[in-house]
Length: 281
Image (cartoon, rainbow, N blue to C red; front, side):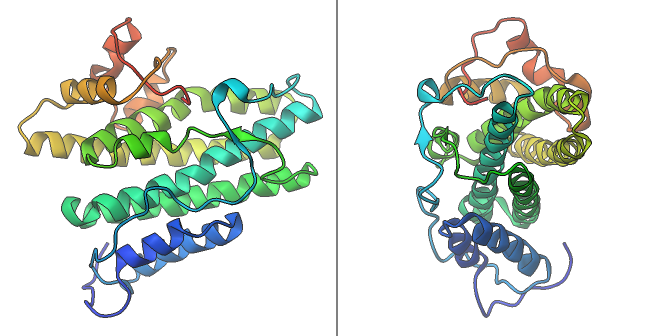
């Protein structure tokens, strides 16, 4: 991003906090995109004068449930199954808006402008993804909030709220990287069902997520190198410390490589190393 910023007017932190505390989905989409645009255009001051909330504001619906209480999606290809799939994806992208906003607002003061640049652009992408998926649900005769949703997706943010490298290790480099692994198969299955529109949406999301993982990996590596630590070893330590579950192969090595996430990070996990990862991946 180029151009000098004025130190008068609304702070970037205040603008981010306002977006995080916007509960209504369409309003949050607008707020996230507006913050990213105003930051890009130099309309927000480089000040971190307010704290980020422990939890963003969300709508009353969808009902948020633990993983073991989530209803089955229904038979693949059925109307119920299709709606459940797109609803689950929409919820992931909705929470991803707040994850990106929180990254910029919580850690930007210490991490610097480049991290704010990158993750506000991620927030705008996630807002666009959610809007596409919500529109898809509407075309199917449903809407976001019509079904229950996974209640644990903010857990990764809460557990890494005091450590930028832990947040980078887990959110972009585990959760979003998992999307690189599973989205191609979902896209192909949707296309095989004759839903070319859905396949295009998933391809758009996949292309953007590669860039998001690249941002996270780059900032993580830079932070480790600045501290004189080995990035892959630091990543494994932080993942083991902060998360439960297992990261399961197969991995999309080509997409991960395009994102700068080499097998040096996750190959040991693939061969059965004792790394703990979040259940919601």
